Image 1: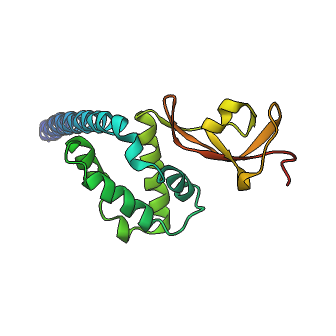
Image 2: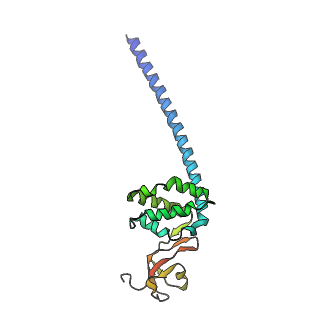
Image 3: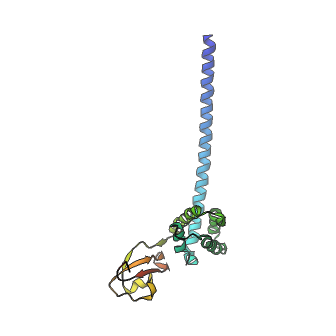
Amino acid sequence: MKLKFILLVFSTLLLTAALIVYIIRIIRRDMRVWREKQNLRNENIQKAVADMTPRAKSFIGLYEPLQMIKNSQLKSFQSVFADWDTRIGNMEDAPALVNYWNETYSGFDNWNNLKAVRKAGELLMFIQKAGITRCAETEVKVTRDIFRQYMAKGGVRIEPDTVAYVEMPCWMSGDEVLEKGIIKGGNQDE
């Protein structure tokens, strides 16, 4: 009776150990497959970034609306994503960018506002990888050169060597201005 019990316990432990080893092997295999998929996705994103960088000008007028969607300041997101979709869809010479867009942003016309906010944030991170940035300053010293990046609100003259307040930041790709920002002079409360 004791021997049967010991054999039963031993065989149960042996089966349990074998099951644990099997589960660990499955987990390792699945992790390897997942890492390979992630590596492939990262490679595809890098290729898409390489396609995006020289085409930054193709999206002039869409950067700030994308930021507004991310900040929940623009609720009618479909038209912005539709513009991105049209412009990217016409880029036959940028297959990695087209594939990335189709895999990541298709079906935007069925998104709710929360998904649009999340996807706008993802797209902003993507374009940042391509070297496209939204200027972060809240005020600038007015020089002749500043009007390369900003325009005065309402066309009002802003005196040189004064401080102007940024109402809407500019968008840059390296030293190139993609979208001019808007500044106003005088008191920030005006």
